[in-house]
Image (cartoon, rainbow, N blue to C red; front, side, top):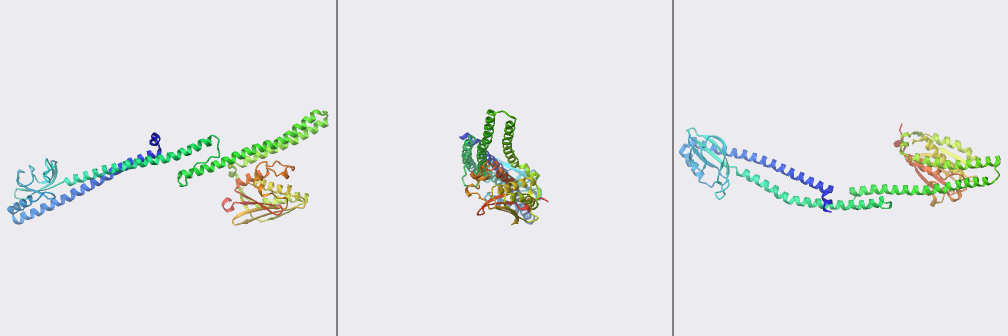
Length: 460
């Protein structure tokens, strides 16, 4: 468990940020020290120069003796925080003052004392900054001040850095371990569920905590994908069952017919009749497979690349003129109200196939004397198509089922067809983004199609 925590990405990221924090802190404090030390030296240099100017002015106004008295008076004052003074002769030897350094010369220089003259109880060293200024009589005035405050500042910064890191590093690493543990716990739950899903239990779903974080968003996307996969698997299972059921009947009839004819007299007429019936049954099976293949091809997304602008009004008008005589032959009344200029974005042949299946479905399942009304129009930026008939209609409980492949109502099982027409309609509608609605026409069915906004989906 500990190894897993230490190898986890959150812990590694925590360590990386800790290292970056430490490095940035060191760099930042180094810049602060360099800047503060430079400013301190500049200020101290100005103070020494000012003090030297004051003493030289007193020398020029009152003479050497008065300068000596002033230096002695200042030298006897407490040294902490004050200047150190000396007067040296031409050879650099100190004549008066409290500056225990040999060879005092003119100009700026720094010197290190073996003992701390600021604090006699301290055995450490003292770093001095000194300015030697000639007085004009052969002597040199020396004014010095300690640089220990710069070293104290550096030590303070180092101590602050060590103290802060000693406090922050354990806290950050502990937080990294806790974060890693929490993340690993969620990953472990997702892993366990994923293993069960891989084992075939598609009903499992990834856990969602409700925190709406990245894991929840990932789980929601994965769960939506799993629901879709489960739906597709159930559909495949249902289609497999339906195919086996619907193909068993024509294949059984074909075999029964061939078997019965095999036992009969093998005359030419009998053989021709047997061949014709076998051909009819085989054609029905082939039509079923052709419909299944067409549904699979329509579901492919690459069909969208062949979409163009389609004049829906013209297409519906042509279909209405073609099927009005077909309805009349069955003693039905077919009326169409088509608004001109309606355009959609799609595949013309597939849209025609979808509308043909809807119209034929209404004609085939409506009795003699029924009214079939087709209406198209634009409403709220969308193109609407409604086909209403006065036939037997579809019970509300069956309206979602009729789009399943091979699903047929009980009263429709004796009519010709494979039960794939409306499944094909749904596939074409889904590829085109068309919404399907079913309603009660009392009596009959209202079949509605709502096309996407042509301004958003049509390309001129």
